[in-house]
Each structure stands twice: as structure tokens, then as C-alpha cells.
Length: 352
Image 1 (tube, rainbow, N blue to C red):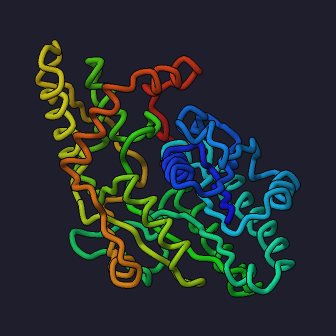
Image 2: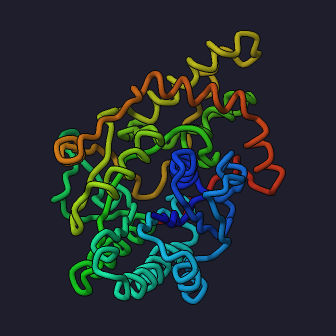
């Protein structure tokens, strides 16, 4: 069995590739190595004999098709995407071309391969479209997203992911391609690019810079450790039902402000000699994101009841481990900065 992981050099993708390769499975990382993809995130998998890397942009239909014909995968786990909401506000067409057109290119390549497979291999083939809970829009103070929640995306990013979900569903219903869709809550953990809330807060606190909190910090997210997420993705591919959607969350809701305060408490604990203690004093409220969703929360009943999945990380312990990882692995994020990534530039402030 060979699995193609698109976006395998990104945050969630690399965690998945590392896990598959360590288990001895044949895995192909397909990634164009944009600002968000880094080979060093693959760790030991990069040199593993059961792992192959292909530098391919999913917007290039012929290049995608060539990879599918070369490796003839039995599973495709599609994680490649432009994913930062702020960037989508400034450059929405980048999100349309990668997230929508790129997904259709993958579906077409998968359909061509799948259609020609022998009956047994055809039955076993799976295509997993990895998506986000943001396609559902924003919740009020109560309620949760289920697999039946109507789509109501509120940002160019979530709209592009919703569109790619619809194309994936269309390929399953129209052509019979065995597609499944997953929606996850906000991920955190090692190797997350320092443009997202948790690594931004960690690095700003470490360096004594202002820790930016959008608006009042009252927006609520349901936090999921990346290792728990990739375990869920593996289960979906192995045991899930084609045509189904699976929501993945850890029942770990917290406000952005409380998350920043928790990270600051970890920094106070780990950096006893820091001149910036207490780090909570660095928190600064900045202009809110246009159309900022208030609250996300996931109902993971289907994952738990049908597939037997449970998250292994509590938010408290997972967050402590994550902060410690960034403190112990400066080489990773310093190399990204040296490569030109600027993690202190604010984006997504386009006028409404």
C-alpha cells in the first residue's frame, strides 16, 4: 500500500508523513515547498527508504497526473492548501487556484488511476479530502458543528475549502470515486509555522515582543493536538466509509485571550531568568480581523462511536509540550526566518 500525502511538508502533513514512515508504510510526500512547506519538518522520514518526495504544485495538472501514474497509490490524503485566513483576505485568488483548482486536479488524477484498477484494488482505494471546521461558519455561545451542519463560510479561506469539499463530494457522487471528507478544529503542536496564534505567542513572548491579540480576544476555538488529528486521519482511511464526512475535535474550547495567557504561564515556568516575566504583560490588543468568526466547536461523535477514536492529549499537557518544543528547537524556526519568512508582519487588514 502506497499513500500520497499532499502538502506533506507542511504542519499537519509532515506530522502525518512522519507517522506513516515510522510505521514502515510506503508514503509519497507531494509538496511545492511554498513558504509554508519545509523539508526539515519531515525529520527522519526524509531519509527513510519507504518515503519519497516529489516537488509538485497541485495546480499543475500534468505534473500531478505523472506522480499518480508513477507511484499508483492506494490512498490519497489531501492536505495541500493555502490555510492562513489573514493571507486569504489579502490574496484570495491564491486560495482559489490552490485550494479549488488544485483539488480538482487531484480528483481527476485519482479518478483516472482508480478507474483502471483491478476490482480488488479499486475497492480498497481511498481519497481523503482533509478540510476545516471553518467551512461551517461561526457559532454563537452554544451549540456544536456536526457533519450535518450547513456550510456557511465567512472568509476567502473557508470559502475556498468549502468549494473544494463540494468538488470532492461531486467526484464521489458523480464518478463513484471513494472519497471521504474530514473537518478538524484548530490544530497545534510542533512544526507549526509561526504565523498562527500559538507559535506567534510563544516566539513573541520568548523574544520580549508584543503578543498581538485580535479584538478583545474573546473568540473561541476548539483546540486539537496535531498528533491526535493525524491518528484520526489514519483511522478514516483504514476504516471510514466512502461518501461520509468525519468531524475531528478534542472538546477543548478556550478563548484566544485565555490561550495566550496559558502560553505566557508556560513561558514563566520554563524561563525563570527571562527579563520579560511575567510574559502576560506583553499581551497587546490589536485591530480585529475582518469577519472574524466568534466561536468554533466540534461534535466528534461519529469519530468516537464509529471509528473508536479518542484524543490522547489534554489541552493543558499538550500546550506545555508544544511550548517546550519551540524553546528546544530554535534551529527549526530560526532557519525559516533566515529563509525570508517574516513572522511579525500583520496581514489581512483589508477594509470591509
